[in-house]
Structures are given as C-alpha cells and as structure tokens.
Figure: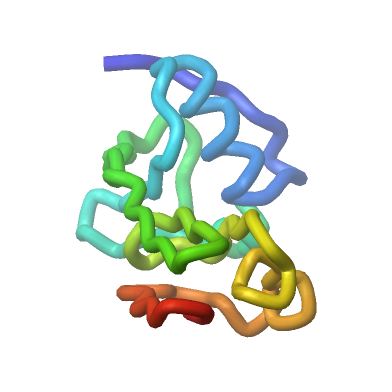
Length: 113
C-alpha cells in the first residue's frame, strides 16, 4: 500500500504519474473503489475522488504489433499508441494519434497497421 499526494487542482494524469513513480511501474490505469476506471484528462476536482480515498492501480501489459517495416506499441484500453519505423509503412501515426483512444487491438499486414 502506497500513499501518493498531488494537488487537487491537477488531473487524474497527474495522480497516475505520481502513482507510477511511487510504485516503480509504468502502464497503469487508476480505478475507483467501485471499479470505475478514471479518464486521465479528467480533473481531480470533477473526478469524484475524496481526500484519503483508496484507489487501485491496474498494471497493464504492453502489446506489440509489427509490419515488415514498422512497429506499434500500446496497452489495451490506453489512450496512446507509439509507432516507429518507415513512415510510409506504418511507422508514423502522428496524423491519427488523436483518434487512437481506448485501443483494444492492432492488426498488421505486410506494409500497414
């Protein structure tokens, strides 16, 4: 059991970063006592969290997909996909990054995702 403190004017992402640093684990999602997963962009004031309330940190296993010329790394349900490799073959997802929310699976072909 760890105790993490952040400013109430911050976001759930600020709390997540503090928890990751405290626990020494990356790829965490934070869950309320009722099991609700918090949205990282949500403000702490609007999240419904109370001072001293216990949360659950859910560690996620990163997933990897590959084409012949590129790779994609993500966690199921996460809000970010990291790609690298030949840009024309799937290695550059910057133009669609804002659409990559709550990713469950990435399928690859020889030259694209």
